[in-house]
Image 1 (cartoon, rainbow, N blue to C red):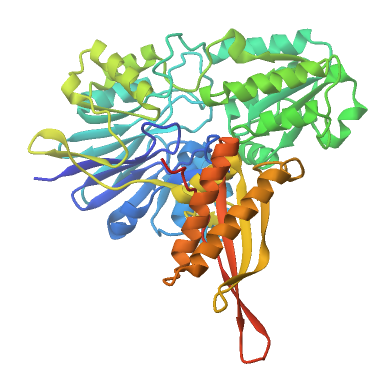
Image 2: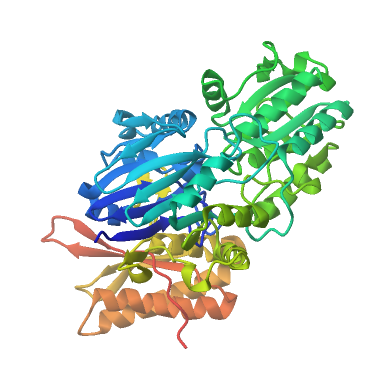
Length: 576
């Protein structure tokens, strides 16, 4: 009797960072390898990727990584993964091309060559199971769902998907194939839940294109379009509308040109007219009503560029009266404040702002009706909502119950939960330790909760440093304590606070020197506690307090030698 396990290393109870492990006997199959962009509390962090520790412990058992599409939430962590693991990676033509671009940015990942291009007709046989694929509709072409066929039934992972009856070629869902999979018998379904909470029906892409075309037709000034670079569908709609209205398009933004040219090379993106694209440096040579500036980038980057344009700090484009800023992708809830701030800055320049999300419910993810259609087509015995925060997973579970899936067969997992199918029943019987791996510059995983806590404290209350030099043999303070601060108070207007702090440090140090049982640890802790109590009493703030103790020793007349004693920054709470 074979055993099946399902483990999530990311993508549940959070947005993005999708990575799901399915074990069939001794084989491990990995679905997607994505990242997420940090929220505000992750100070200084560039991206967050899944924790690979469980995979490190079971590396010999991994048979492959199977990718659903080319967005960062599905392929973004791949460069870090292939730097450690030498296992084959499977994906569609465009997905693999974008994965290779991502790997070019990491030195160790550049050496990896074990990529395999598959399509919806591909079936790969392994010792314990076989893997096949089916076409799905998303905002990027060549998106695929994954079917893992086992002795007990199929395990299906949708990836990001929605249903759109007007979808263009290359974006269409294979509904007949979904029906076939449902007839074969689906043991477990891992289903996209990112839009499950939205009560509005998602508008089809034909309506979106007509809105874009209409906007280009009736605005008589320059148009600056904000779009995520990997949203190939939206890029195509913008290019088509610009060509129809006789406008030239200038590209700007992080990775935009590389992604666009890759998609064009693979014929996943095409130019309606040969001379449609112009250099960003040449925009000023054209009349405003003949130009579209396409500002692209990763999640959040287009907004940052728009803010620079509004502040006249952008290298090429600054807003002026008569401009229209057109936001064509739907921002996440976490970015709503940033969007409102950006709009306000743009309006101050005299430019206007329009967004697709103001008029339509637009998303690349399944609506409630889409989810229920999927459930009815596949008829899964067990459902695992994935891709979204808890409320979204719960909304997906509600959708499933409405179409007859039993509540006890729906699993709202936490990261690291291990769902096991054995002896005809699925249970969450155990768990593995799973955290987040944070990327800061070239550092991978070297930033933990302690460092983030210190960064947060420093950002809120600053740092307070006390430097004092002592002669322990003579039991005296050699130099008056020097007090300095950063991000805590304005020193010039807080002289009394600084002088009193010097007196406190002097008294504490001298008391410790006079003690027969002198202890460095006690001295440093005593300084922290006394200063923390006083500073909180005066300011109601808790800065990081860093004592720096210099020791001077007279060494047989050969001159003074200094020893420096310091501590790791640590927040000391007020004594209660």
